[in-house]
Image (cartoon, rainbow, N blue to C red; front, side):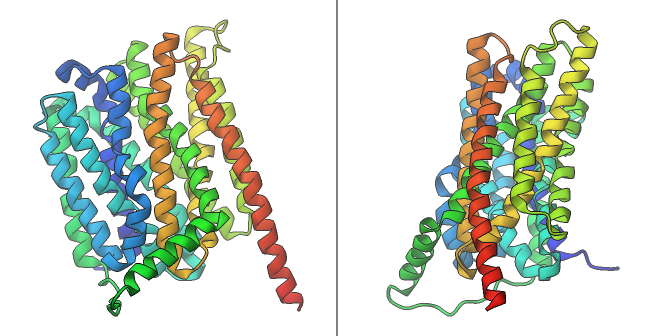
Length: 411
């Protein structure tokens, strides 16, 4: 039997980690009844999984090469498994919040090393396309969770749903450990060599503009995407839709994001400028958020208005998917050196987590104050405008790099 591509196995490991993020949205209506979870608590439950990434992304990125990329990812999946299995016994929202924070640590350790691992496992000709595929791990895992969650909870309750995903992460941890090549061994450094090496990588990363631009861009992307997709089941439940309809509808909205991720890798592979993809992605997200939430369809038939809003959410997600695939590619390209890629990805992960931590509670707060979701587009639109500004700065930086490359060829 032919062995699975190791880079694809890394993507599968990321998907199993993403299931822990995506398992919560379809469970929120159930948790509201079972544990008394309020709307604001739901916002924090959605975002607490990003707490570790928000605070520890950069240190873990610095340490990943020393710890071993494979060990780091496998360890993260083990932590996710333990936290998920324990979560099934939670009896209060506070306990679930603590365990969601622990899951956040596991998610960070599982996801952060993946781009560097993929870079090691594929040829340069395959790198952009494979990183675009990696960018789809989150929407794919989220879509699977949204689609399967209602079915599993109908049969086994929300506890069975937690235990099933915890078991899946344990399985993937074992598979990765057995199938991936060993981590590269580094000669031990004496004295303060290791500390100086970490400090130098940190200094080079934080003093270069590229890591900051990709990190902030990921923050403004991830905050609005998770807020919209994470609250869709709750929005539909409040609108009176059954879980049988709301679950698949939300799953499709998450799944179409994969199309943009995969397309970004293909387009970059064929020479499309990355800043152009960012312009398109952020512009369409701004438009899609406005059409999905603003009261522009009030005079239209209710069923038609619902269909148009849902179409806007699909547009928001699929075209927005161009952004993460492009940023993963740029994180490798704009890292200030070969040995700062993990640090750059860790910095990007930290800001992505900050965006995902802030986005859902902010949208929940605006919805609570407004008495509905009609002003949510202000939050998503503000994030999109910030993304366009960052893409403009990145365009100037990439233009200078291209000019230097052209001058070097001519000389």
